[in-house]
Image (spheres, rainbow, N blue to C red):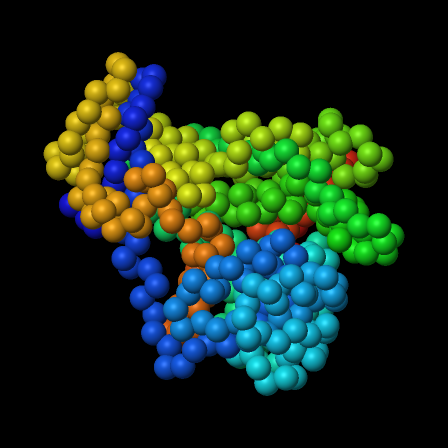
Length: 408
């Protein structure tokens, strides 16, 4: 029985399947060691940048020494979260200050290329939020420049560094799931995507997601993260996408749909069904991969495997405790999971104690310390971003769009 098998934890189920909650061994994470604290700067301290600030402060051997933002109010708010950090109003000033060894970029998508290239030229390590860019041309430019960068360059596609997703991928690529059947995902969150401001110029700057010229809508801004999970698990990319979308709730003259649906098609006939809305929160954010023996559902902090009734019994199941749930038998593998729960490392027994961005940042720092490669490279992120760009183009045109990876 492998280490992965021993860390499987089963919980409740209903219907004709047994549900297995996937619980990774978190003791393998945060294992890096740096000779001196890593001085990290953050470019962009809006909502995502502030979350990154919060997670960086949890990591050992990391010191947030600088941050910059063109918006003075956001910069002030960011500085309140990082004691001792120095604020700058431009990336050039921060990079030339000598105060940073590594930089996390969390600005609006359309600004990524210019900032990323400056950081690459400065020779610092870089964590670049995803999607990488809002155009194919910018994706190509970032990808080409990253190949010659001196530092460790990581892309913020969080699924690849997520311990639950890493564990579940091990099951997906074995006979536990068997023949891949279908894939679907959703992102439902009721929010208007608006940051209020009485200043017209500041309002436009803050609300870039509502500008089709600067952002790629739900399919590009959120879908890119979720599409990459399927790319990573299946080892392939879609070749075309159909999309549709409209404003279903936020009727404020916005030009970006608040509800979208996409079908991403692969060469072999498989497809991803994707839906996202800003008008309703039911179901939240998740991905599901169906196979002939089981389905895997991933919810970023949690993951489950649902076995089919006719799926063969795996060897590791002999080590499991069994518990009846309605008409089905749930199998609970407690080796490792019990210890982690006792240590307070598992939220509600089966979830991760930190948000996904924590593990992506931790992976980046670990790659810096070990002089290794991060979980997600810029080249992989560029391909995922291109899929998101094509999906948004399909939504905006209500048509089928071919996905072109030329130049990557």
